[in-house]
Image (tube, rainbow, N blue to C red; front, side):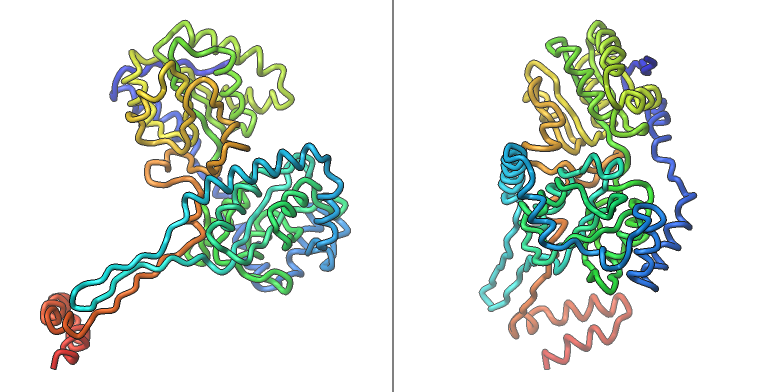
Length: 434
């Protein structure tokens, strides 16, 4: 199987690697107009537009009465699931909730001797809309996405959460999505997909109340809709295709590394899977393992396409150069498959999630460990972070200055205002000092 082989010695080698990977960023602008029209239709016609699009793309016999999933259907799905699966979901939810509980911020205040009080008040947004992709006609439900998006909103204290997901052809949702919602305590689920669902969550319809923040993954139509709504509602992020970088030394097991690279490659033909290592023998063994393992995967064709276009085995002179390259790649997922990963951790500046050692494969974070799997991609981790409780909060500054404060500092404030040519600002302060 073709998989690019490259060398990285120093910064002079980076431009060629960057040019190759930057081609993943090329936006598909052909959908911009389509999505703009969809959003306008939902804004203007509400439920009628949702029904029309859903009939065309998902469920031919759909009608407006089917938009909201009855609570009985949610409860029934939970009752029908195998008890063993419910136990796994409950444990995953508990672990994710425990992790995010540590992210919750508190309001704070400072006081001065003159009586001035300054502070910051942290409050959750009022309402959140979560999008859950249907996944291959509803047969591969993205239950982990629902868990990862809902829990930080709940920990933040959001009281109103709406979920949308495209219906199957028979106007139902996969029971695992419904059951997971029940376990999370979510009772508002609507059958709508793609850009029209995003529009409904943002603008509201006769059935769906508008939301303040939208979160959840999706295809190019979902991503484009979210990007077009920036500034009107909050969004989690506009994420690109998945990616993994593995920094490995000779202590790593080639079969494990190949399996980890394929765990990302099977997502999407645009997913990037890159091994960085100073061990040329290990690099060659991993290439052979990739070929062997890929042919045995149900999604092997997707993985093969991904590896052919965006897979890479990059040799470096040492781990120091490897860490330098990792920071330039700024990956969504980073595995430190090293004999002692902790000695290298301090050298890593840019990575969405870091998996330490040989027994911490990336899927552990996708489903179960606790940290959020919604991560920035396409090197945006240089300035952004994983989805967190903070995405669903807003902060208000509180300013209570005393008469003494204004008397002491009013003339300084007025001077700054006049330097900017804002006389009314200056007078607003000065009138309180007379």
